[in-house]
Amino acid sequence: MKLDDVISIIFLFGVLPVSIMVIWYFIHKNMIKERMKLIDKGIDLSTIKRKESSFQDVLMWGMLAGGTGLGLLIGDILLETNVFKDDMILGILAILFGGVGLITYYYIRKPADKN
Image (cartoon, rainbow, N blue to C red; front, side):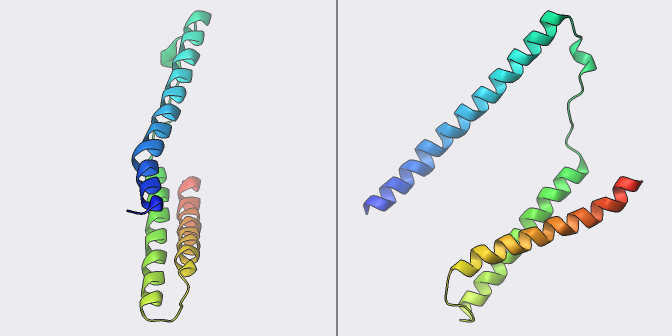
């Protein structure tokens, strides 16, 4: 096994999950502190509304993921057919089609916001 492979495995299964857990811990800890301060001030927590995930949010992430996946698929097809020889086309098309997905979402949501 090469050193690069070992470093990749350590990062993937060690550093990355620990970082995610630490970030989650601090966000959760700050939310609890904020709620405790509101309770100390005498504010009723039931009056504070949390933003609930709506259909529009799911649609946005779905269109972003779908556009990115489509870009990767087209890039892979172009690489296999030797239209492009550089692997950079995968990233370029993923970003491009992801952006097209977000622009499409914007035009779908625009009429829905008026209603």
